Each structure stands twice: as structure tokens, then as C-alpha cells.
Image (tube, rainbow, N blue to C red; front, side, top):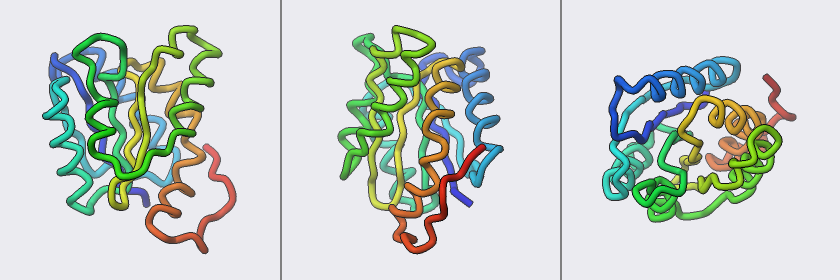
Length: 166
């Protein structure tokens, strides 16, 4: 099982209808695969708080995958990509690039998505958009790549099976 943490980045908190729907979308997609949610937290869209939370989540060695949602747009205060870049040791640009390409098929504004993906220690961090539709398109597009990516990151190269499909 892939131990997964969800980090929602939102100034409105847990009662935000948008966060409730977006996180529910993530959970629905994850339940179709080898993922188990081990943590869920909400943090305000402040770069230092996001950076700190990502460090705690990766340094605990309890998470194989961290999915952030929100804070990836063009507003000045949206800082998830910057916080993620400060934390990761190696970038995995293909994941974010593919999410943008797939998103463009349904929404031309997907090109404005600034999310990044990368590795810190043995944890993959993936920035997702902040809305349910963007999360659905983005996460669904990369979902088959996540199990083998995690296997490679944790060193289980010999056990990487063929493609996982939903």
C-alpha cells in the first residue's frame, strides 16, 4: 500500500465547500488503487507554513506520497509551488507537465497551473490544482504512474510491475 497524505492549502479552512468537494474527489480516485490515506491536514496559503508542513510530512518517514491541493494559481498569495521547490531535493517535471497537457483538453486555463512535483527523502510530493474538476483531471491523468514511481523512489526497482490501471 502507498501511504498517502493529503495537504489542502486554503485560507477558508475545513468548512470551505470547495475544499470538501476537492478532497472528496481525491479520495474517490485513490480508493481505486493501492493507496491508503494516512494523514489529512489543511494549512493556510502561506509559503512558510506550507514549507514547514511538507517538511514534517516527509521527514516523519510515514508517507510515500503527499498530494497537495490548492495554492497553484497566479494570485500573488498562491505559494504552493514555491514552498514545494524549497523542500524537494529532486524535481519530477514530467508529472506536472502531463497534468497541464491533459488539463488543456478540458480547460484552456490549465496552462496557468503552476504546480510542481518532486522528491524529498523517499516521499513524492505532487501539487494538484485547488478545484474538484482540476484535481479530477490532473490526478486521474498521473494515477497510473504513481505506484511505479513510488517503487523506484523507495528502491523496489525489481518489484515494479507493469502499468497499474484504475
